Amino acid sequence: MSIILWVIIIILVIIAIVTIVHMYNNLVGLRNRVKNSYAQIDVQLKRRNDLIPNLVETVKGYAGHEKGVLEEVTKARTGVMNATTVEEASAADNQLTGALKTLFAVAENYPDLKANSNFQQLQTELSDTEDKISYARQFYNDVVLKYNNACQMFPTSIIAKIFGFKEETFFQTPESERAVPEVKF
Image 1 (cartoon, rainbow, N blue to C red):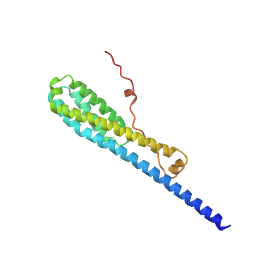
Image 2: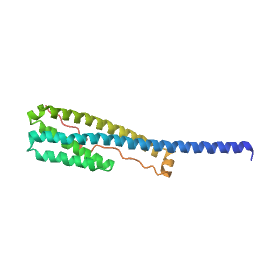
Image 3: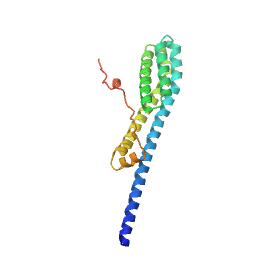
Image 4: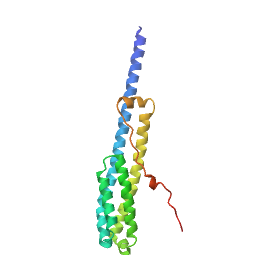
């Protein structure tokens, strides 16, 4: 074989190696972004979990006989703290969100509680944290979409299978919360 043919073969091998390395590194980067974005959700969930005991104690002072609601919030908070997978965290988070909605509905029955500055501050902080959790979930799902696309699209899917890259799970809303609320005047 001529030297030109060997040069062409070497150049093609180098291009193939560089392409494979680039696809692998892209998959690693996307997988790490998924992990980072999930960690950001976890940070916001921790912040919310830290606010909840203060909120529960404030409500206890005004509405101590609403024991069932307070227990449900505490139980749901424990579920979020003990979740180890995206699916568990999503389910526990949805349960906690529902329990908090019930807690705030109960608070509506206590004008003194609603007027309490500590309660108002906690409610505002919790509302801000809920917004941050919502944004973090959206960002996580966007990153998971990019990562899953890379794992499924040719030719990166070949590299993903060879090196064991697995698709990630989206943070999802349960069916019960997807229904359009009925508004009546």
